[in-house]
Structure formats: structure tokens, C-alpha cells
Amino acid sequence: MDSNFRFLPTEEELVHYLRKKKQEVDHIIPEIDISNYEPWDVPGLYAGLFTEPDSPYQDMFFFSPRVYKYIDNNYARTNSATARGFWKTTGKERVIKAGGSIGRKRTLIFYEGNKTNWVMDEYSLIEDEANPTPKLAQQRDCVLWCLKKIQDKKDTEEPE
Image (tube, rainbow, N blue to C red; front, side, top):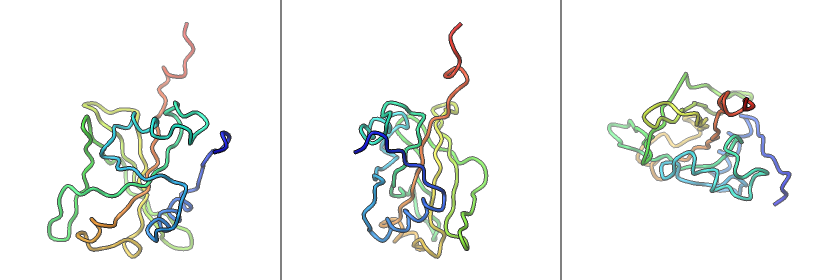
């Protein structure tokens, strides 16, 4: 792969890729189960895909199946825990529009006891595009993630 390749899609394009993924069309975005990895381990999975594979400050895009903690009376709660922490939703879910509502975006922050600098944006299809039945969704539902680490001021300051 060309070492100068940088993948910077718009939110609308990300939802388009998610729609294509659900139709089982080939794509350039890898698939991993995010609940199996700590956020700091994910950049290592991308060795060779990015110009700076060791830099956690780049946006990393991937598909992941939704992993459900439980399903009860048509309500499905997703599992947001890893072995060492958990992802917590922050802020409001946003609707992504392109000639109409096409998807949703929500932001999650990783906690390992305390809040960390790891942030993920979750992109999902709206209900009429996604499978609305939680039991069937458990088998086929997929989301697109954008994982990044936000730099601290101390990460960018010059030593004295």
C-alpha cells in the first residue's frame, strides 16, 4: 500500500461505507471486534495501513459487530466493556443528513478507572436502514468506528 495514503472521509461517506458493508460489498476498512481490544492496542493492528503506524493520534476507522450485553423485550443493550475499562457515551447522539436522515453518530470516551484521552465516534444506520429486530440485529448488525487519541498539552509541549 502507498505510504502516503491518508483516509479522511466525511461523515456522510462513512455512513455510505456502512451501508455498503451491510450489503457485503468489498471495502477498504478493516473489521475488528472492539470489545476484544484496549484502545491503545488498536494502532498496532494497523501496522502498514497508515503513514505513521505507531502514532495513536491518527484517526483509525474500522467496522465492528455490535456485541449485546442482553436483549429484553425488543430492547438491546450493547456491551461497552473491555478487559481493563469501558466506553461511556458522552453528549447527544447526532443525526447525519444528506438529502434526508441517513445515519447517526455518537461519541464515546474510554475509562480505565478515570477518563482517558481515547475517543471513538460510532456511526450507525438509522432504523429504517438497520435491522430493527434486536434478535436479528445481534446476528448481523454492524457499526463503523473512528478511534483516536486526543493529545494532551503535555504531549505537545517542548521540554524546558
